[in-house]
Image (cartoon, rainbow, N blue to C red; front, top):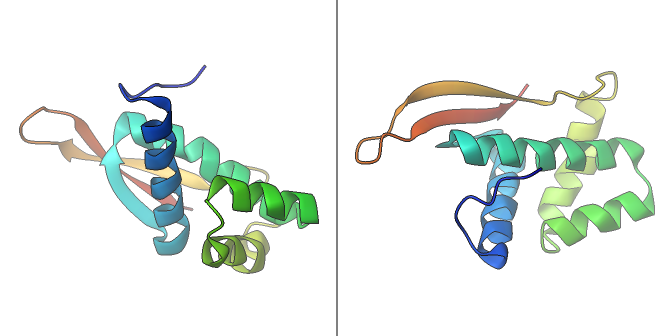
Length: 112
């Protein structure tokens, strides 16, 4: 099952893709807990694609991040080598605080 995040499909996919790119390029992102739990799935899947290193895996990664070659190069050249001896669990969620206004729990999603 997945979270709809109270968004239309195209908006939800755009949010998740953008957060995934940010985590991969910067190493971490601060967001709500529900979004972080959903983005974690995609980051782990992309790093697994990078560890496979095949052409099909590269194309699947490019399709998810909207042909952002900088992100895919970082996955396949840097992150795949860092995590080659690790079987999953490439991210961690650290709870920070409750956001003012709507009391949503903010967390930091970062690469291990």
